[in-house]
Image 1 (cartoon, rainbow, N blue to C red):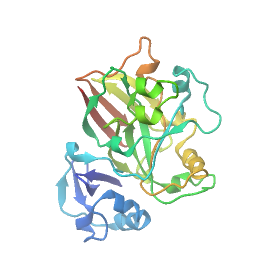
Image 2 (image 1 turned 45 degrees about the horizontal axis):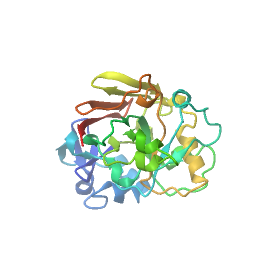
Image 3 (image 1 turned 90 degrees about the vertical axis):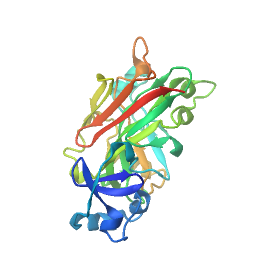
Length: 282
């Protein structure tokens, strides 16, 4: 199943261009928005498996919001690919990688305009995003996927001066300017993603490849991340987990390279889709 947030309403996709409104098709039983659906994810999934399609509505990409627009918690994972850890000047983590947050106000959808903060040091990080489907604590090994409602494409946009400025780094704030957490284009349930632990992901600026990798290269794969987090915190329905980025970010290049006004960043993941951000001056 592919589930979109179309102008604030939950829509199940029929194909890339059309879908049907969940609230209308279920006669008000589910929705109208996605936050309500995550609270009853198991019940909703059972209904959706046999639900007849309702009246078709067009999928307008500019109206696609984040598939989890109001998560209780947003987890972002650092240094979860060995090649990215190396380009960042760190050893690959042996225990749980660094975990930080992106604030909810930074979350946007699939096709957006992003205002660049002054200073010219905004970087890109394409990531597989996992969205939690049920309350979870102390998950046993091998059960992490059972707590995941679905997957999406994410960009962990990062203003490097704010992020790394001393005397102590400001990871959360440096990565949470408005529009710095685009997620989309929709949620894809794990059963609908072929080889869900080995997906190609990539980022392009104006059509030029800047990142390309595979989720099989994750140091902590999705299920293991979810299990590890659940042993420290309680995960809630709709929570968002940015799982890490492969090599190729601007900070790790020689010379360093950052996003400029007028550039278009396209990010994609095999079996899920693409999102696109256009950058303008502040």
